[in-house]
Image (cartoon, rainbow, N blue to C red; front, side, top):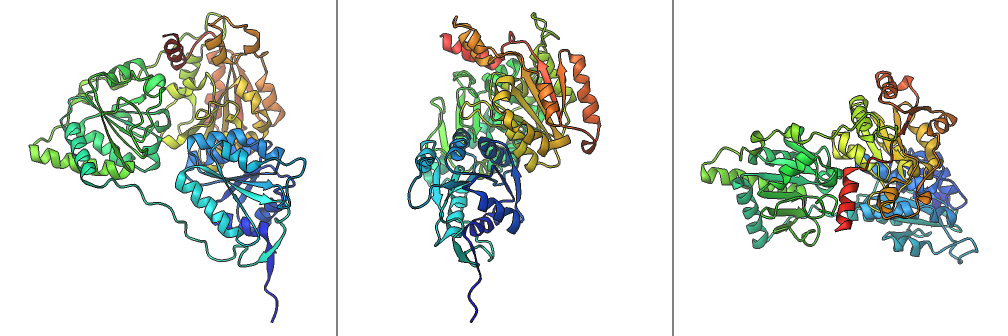
Amino acid sequence: MPAAPVSTLAAAVARTLAQHVSDVVGVMGNGNAHLVDALVRETGVRYTPVRHEAGAVVAADAYYRASGRLAAATATYGAGFTNTVTALAEAAQARTPLLLLAGEAPTSGQRPWDVDQIALASAVGVRTYTVGRADAAGTVLLAVEHALAHRTPAVVALPYDVVTAPVSAAEAGAGAPSALRLPSPHVPDGERATAQLARFARLLSRARRPLLLAGRGAWLAGAGPALRELADLTGALTTTSVLGRGLFSPEADLGVAGGFGADGAMALARGADVVLVVGAGLNPFTTRFGDLFGADATVLQVDLAETATHPFVDSYVRGDARVVTEELVRLVRSERLERAASASSGWRESVDVEAARARPQGDTLAPDGRLDPRSAAARLAELLPADRVVVSDGGHFIGWAAMYWPVAAPDRMVLVGTAFQSIGLGLPSVVGAALARPESTVVLTTGDGGGLMALADLESAVRVARGRGLAVVWNDAAYGAEVHVYGRQGLAPDPMLIPEVDFAAMAGAVGARGVVVRSLADLDVLADWTATPSAQREFLLLDLRVSPLVVAPYQEEILQRAAR
């Protein structure tokens, strides 16, 4: 009887992984070389190399945020793994499911260049699954289930001395894909939950000025259609967190809530008498540090947290956003029938929503002769391709895209870095979004500080996105947030400044087209670029020489709050 065919543990991992992801992004090293080889040779997974390990994790993070599909990153052990930690922490804070397949010290013990990677991952809230000879495929499956069920990263560790160990062909993942065991949507039950939902429906159907606020959790749950129906039934105005932008129809939508919101729109939100918050965590930025709603407003919340996420919430229901919102639609219809009331509140018809959303345009140039970022952002909004995914680095400039550039849906606004308050994750976000959305233009918004920190993956962004990629660098020759916060306190300015960098020239060095923008007229190059078919154009980088004197409204709000 012939011996059973054998394969390697690396092949077992690769083939199991291929059942659940179509893209892996990474940097090859000693610890993951055999895995990358197995992915390329033995599976249909698309492997995309980047130039820094943090960029690999960021790309997998942005991939999920832009598509809702799981992706994986891979890195070697030791220094390769430690390079990923900031990006892992961001994904954990943002609750982004992804896999990091990382080389690990051999089972015999650590070598001089090894570190305790399990402890490092645990320190940022990430669990590690270590593969072994006995059940490599099952271990990978557990990691996939953990990432998706808990919306978190998971590390799959590959000990150096077992990746080439022989395993049977069956263990190598040759069989049919294993079904994932994921939890069902949380459905509120019991008399108290039933009574609470009935109360929510009564309050919403009888409100004179109802407002719906939705966040990323509502989008992930698929609650958008039910929320839009509930808004129409009640005549509610709507608003979203920045990560929920695009969830509602624009006709009655106030835009982003909080510091990124327009003053007129936020004044209307403050006038609401009943507010339903769905899938939004109500952080200080969304709530204007607690001042978003009036003191007399009744605030209702639906979320998956154990309890309400802000002290001003009057009533809370724990449950899946889609399930609960669909039930509220049914209950509101029933309430209307019982009261023989067919008309909605009429609030949305009584106000000029478009005027309330108006943004300050700013001057063409600031007093220092550099571009006013507000006028530049407004002009860019007119010129950017409509079918776009906006990816953002962290930094003072984040307000400009969030305020001025609307997107069609929440998965088209990707902010990697804000959850962990990191900068330098923008350029590799382009890679993930471009892989996830091959039909769309990916627009990066980044600062000069974060852009320099992420520079290793400028080449990756240009190579992967090509003519579908556009980078806008808000180049104010400074770390803007530090200037506005600590400059006002009288700290020495020199450490906050950056010698002006020619990002346009650096773009040309890696095959992109770079343009220095000193006036609004210089932005006309974007009109020509947008009108050209993507297959015929280059990656475009716009190096905007903007003024450091103009403070984003959300930053001014933070400064005023800190001064109290």
